[in-house]
Length: 271
Length: 226
Image (cartoon, rainbow over all chains, first blue to last red; front, side, top):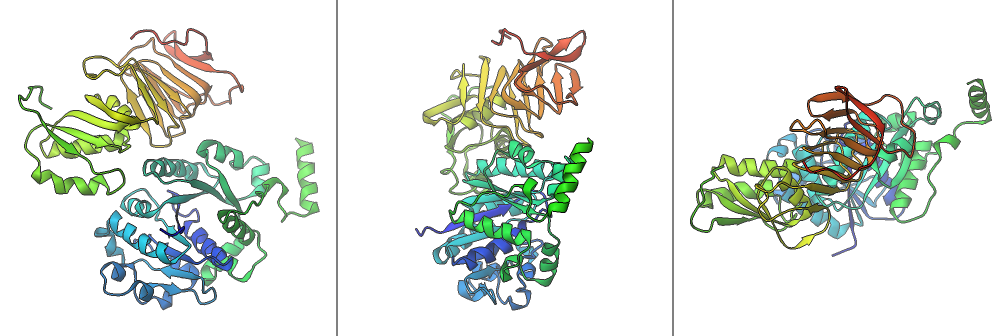
């Protein structure tokens, strides 16, 4: 057995940033020299290829690999700028009907022989797609946003991960708005970690650049963007590799200048 | 399920090793080859929640098999089985994750006095017991705990709790931090308090003058006999 790591990226709720995290983390890990593959387990609504800008390069998919009509390396799509990163695209949505957890285990097993990191982009929900994806995973990253519904769903997913024996499970808190947190208009980081009781792997600030990069098909971490989200993704990748990097404190967000901080101070004086 | 005792030793269905395959996939293939009638079910080291176990039993029930005895090596499954009121036997070398006290080899007749659940009940988790229930851990929002006797939470109660689920109005709910979404005692239902409780104060909910009220927890904490 190699010391390859198979990591499931899941959230329960949709739209909290699973695919974005998978794409960015993949690029960041590859950029740090680790051989990385991202596996799209979201067969129904696949879009990991879109985010990586590799949609037009897909020839074969996981479906053909499983049917043994092509070799694994034929299906793997190498990223154009980041040669350490490969994508194994999901087959067509009809695959959902016959794909079994064992099939996912087979694919993940094949990938783990060649790569240091296998990142699995999990579909939203806790139905068959999730069960398939979780069967292949050894560890997991649960991503959530500071909203009650997302936290609730994450909690459910963590429970399911525990019963499937996936460990360790780590947490990424996405779309953090420090200002709203400071004004107590949003769940605070402590509130979330309090409920989920997981080690925090990283905080990602709400960042418009994420939307831009998603639409362009160029993950933020790709060209060393200085945006806060890109930095956060890079840090998450380093922490995964075992580096000890202190977590960002949303109260001392670097993006806010002195002016904003003075305004904050004045606001607190008024109350 | 039939109450008639079968003279011969019932067939024992053994689940495959934990996580080697998913039992949902495995079971349908086995069903045709099973002898008709009730059987013993050896869960092995599978950790099944109440929901999973219920699903498993339902699948067997639909195929016309009742389960006479459940054999398991996992404490969590043991609790699930006890919660569903199944006859259960511990296999040797039980994996110590959670713990059941007062469990007799023949539990459907003898009532379980106190069930101890170790670990947090997360959203969607549900535990239901016949006797009193002690949870060493939190009950998160979306999780629920139900007992015919009292419910004790050695942690934060932020989900739902139902004490005296079979109508015992003397039952109470005690938690180190009581911030439930909803409390039920016997037939009464109450929403949780809106304001945050003072920290470091265990609280209990019980029926006072026909309504559920919350007060600082007071001894005796030891559950009385049901």
